[in-house]
Every structure is written in C-alpha cells, then in structure tokens.
Image 1: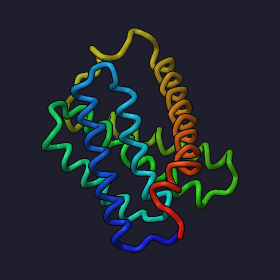
Image 2: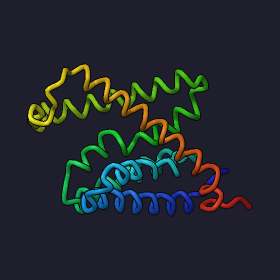
Image 3: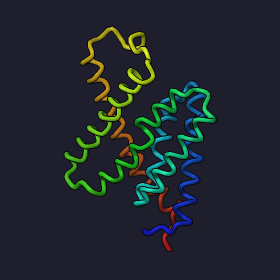
Image 4: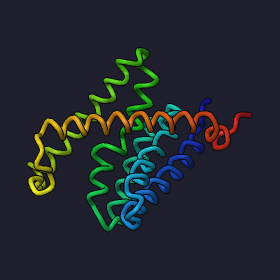
Length: 177
C-alpha cells in the first residue's frame, strides 16, 4: 500500500513516541530491561516495512535526540543508537531486496556484527570505557559465540514480531480502502 506524506508523518510521530516511551521504561523498570529494549527496536519496522525508509531514519534520529534529553541512563541510548534503533530499517531493506534467505540471514548477522564492533571501538577508543571489569574471565571466543547466539535469537524473535505485525496489527493501523 502506498502511504501519503501525512500518514508517513503521523506514523513517524507515533513510532518516535513509542520508542522513547520504551527506552524510558528500560531505565525505570528494572525487571523489563531486555523486553523494553527489544520493543524499542521493533517500532521502526512500521515505517520501514512500508518502504518509507527516509521517514524511518528521521524517526530513529528523533527518538535518539529526544531520548538524549529524557533518559537518566545514557548507556541504553548508546545501545539503541549503535545497533538496535536502525536494525529494523536494514532488516526491512534486506527483506525487500535480497531474495535468497540464507544470504539475507547472513547479511543481517554481518550487519549486527559490524555495528557491535563499531560500538565496542567507540567505547574503547573514543569514550575510553574500561570493559575489563565487565568482561567475564572466559575466553574472548566464548563471548563472541555467545553474542552470535544472541544475534540469532534476536533475529528470530524480530521475525516473529514482524509476522504478527503484518498478519494482524498492520491491518488495524493502516486500513485498506
């Protein structure tokens, strides 16, 4: 379905508000950090799933900017900006452009790995963050394998949420006439 500019703008505002709300919930609700962080990354798919990539990116940038002023813990914002916020845009683009599902899956995994590495480099080099106290005493390879498993689980759960959105929520949010 083709969306006009006013629908894209209103969807962008809703996505931004819901994303900022979820990011704030990560900071104030200690028992729901993982679930709310995941939900904050799902909302961007509403725009990018409709092919409104520019509006999705603007909504991502607005969510990051608003969260910078609202969130009491900036670490959550860093994770959102580095990886979770824009993943939905890339995922929708890859689903629309890459036909082979194995290549599509590995391109998403490579995308996640690249931005995770960029985030770690920013933490270590630019922000001079000391990760040695946070890293477990295991080998680095065990940590890399655990992160790969987390990315796979994230992608599978994201796919389930996208299917639920496309099957039921999309028709309620964007009725066809």
